[in-house]
Length: 119
Image 1 (spheres, rainbow, N blue to C red):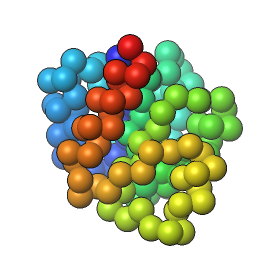
Image 2: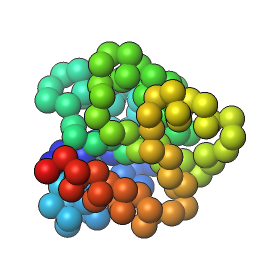
Image 3: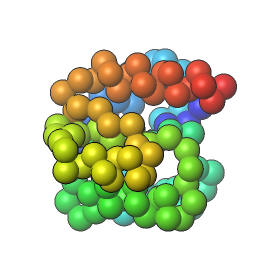
Image 4: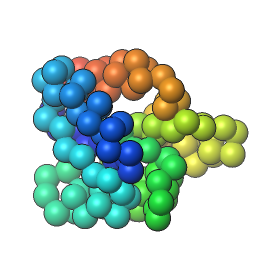
């Protein structure tokens, strides 16, 4: 199973990569929404994307909108320090799995469950 972690904070990307590689995932990392779009368009798309909301340039929602518009229909976990009411409409419209960035364990549980569902 392939996972793409998208976060402008390299330490978060490194942490998630270590956790998921230990769980048996093949993990790629992108530091921006633009880099994510390039990676998804340029090769075999990942099975799951963990996408930070607050990034310079394209936000997570902006990136997810572009991915969905380009036909990416696999799970996207929106990983953010703030998942408030103003994001809920976009989360529903784009079929995202929102998780608080302070709850790393929830991200692990959701991605593991998605991996099991895709296997």
